[in-house]
Image 1 (cartoon, one colour):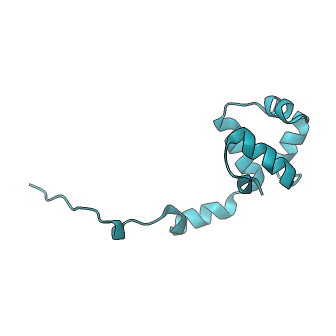
Image 2 (cartoon, rainbow, N blue to C red):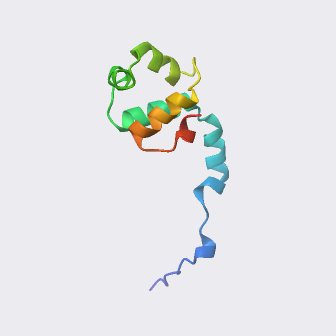
Image 3 (cartoon, helix red, strand yellow):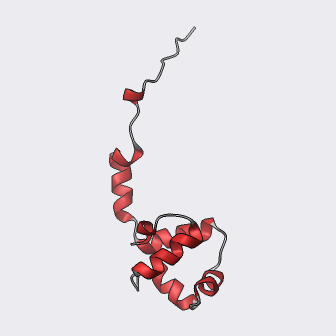
Length: 89
């Protein structure tokens, strides 16, 4: 019989403290984050553009990091996706 090891809270590590996570987080950009949340919610660029009163091309430019996401836009996105605005800046 294999003895079960009880995991104590001291044995657990926050994922944000792990080296692999830090390396991946560096690769993230506001545009990639926007694309992730848009797809997660099942929206097309066109649908998101309509919700924001802008164009599909503008959303594409944001997602491809050709244009920065302003604080005002980050706030609007945070309301649509129900996440902190800081995720988009």
